[in-house]
Image 1 (spheres, rainbow, N blue to C red):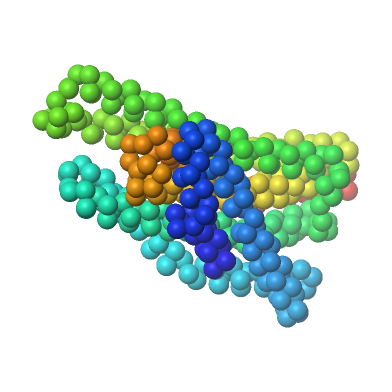
Image 2: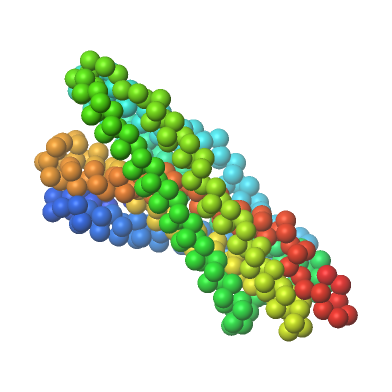
Length: 372
């Protein structure tokens, strides 16, 4: 609930953050981008504190029940809290579906040349949909944070069982372990860059196609002839499938390569759990970085979109003003943030844990006297 309220405050044009982006648009495109980025970065504060308090409270309440031994009781408490969050999933899905429906309603209204009054209604629904989408993404990150803590506990238990050695802590002062953490954080930024650049390349192709159709068929602009929608939809659909192959491969292959490399280093240095420790650091750093990056991208994108909607309501010059043009630039930057890179990171965060858990036995070194 705290994350929901925080996200609403940061992305609804009824509140200061979005209004500040709209106001910054008056002085140009650059200030719109600067203020939008700052809003997204500051928006990570409240959700992070909320998740931290939730994890600590759930863990220690679970530990006080004395169910199981060691940290298992604490993990039980965290699991119960995670299931509590997931019990609201049906309402969150409904809120998430509202956004695209309202957005498409606006598109249909514009394409069918409905009166301005109809478009005003769909614009307000679209703005509300941007808020609900951002809220559901905040919820997704919160639940992913709780779930990843549980997966990390499962990760340590699995490696302890396979190695036959106690594995209950990770020392990030060890150089190899620190390197693993750095790589884990880097992968989040690299994946985000790949996702955003994929949108940029696809948008480039679509713009070229649209310009070609306008040049070959001027009657499109006068509504005498329909454009070739199928061509544009085909470009976008093919790119959506093709462009994400490499980013997905990077997320799956990198932890395996890192784990195997340090497993062999562990064999030569007589440290059978070195590969596991490096991957634990990779997982911790990658998860934390992914959570913060996703919060930033989701919130900044939603705030930019609604800043444009706020100007279109007649504020700061209204439609077709210089402020509106600057806000369109912000919205264009925000779309790959909130609709591509941000949601993709939700999957990546869980994928890191799952990949390492499935391939776990590969990363335990064979040392004399030890059986992996």
